[in-house]
Image (tube, rainbow, N blue to C red):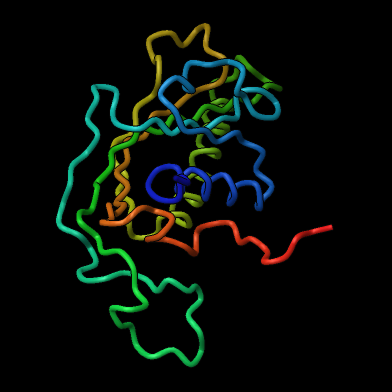
Length: 196
């Protein structure tokens, strides 16, 4: 089943937004990605890792669905002569809204002056600001942001750049049908003919 909803879709949309705006940061989803050194972006560091859950394992909770009733049409976009939605042409209904907790690690460095705290602060603040723009674009009203924490603040003498940790909650529905049926518009379109 394709990863079309929830955190995978959010991460893909954030990465796409940043890339389309000329931001070369690496954006990854995973539990082990925040401690790796091989996934740095251009200029080193320059990385955003979105880790499912909180460091203590809180995955969020299931809440009442945000949309009641049946979901989107099976054809996307709907034909122009289509009647209002009917049971024959709609798919999926939301069972729950998963208020999915995640921890975002934003790591940046100004390599021109690695010992200058001000420049390291500015670098990570700039990347955080780009992340927030991209996250707002990707999730719109389905995103709640929480506390910010400096990572490894006790070891300020030997850090390369600076890293922030942001708590967030993404609201994503769980459907009574599989994702590829419930959200056909997210799938990559395929041609109906063989390419030569």
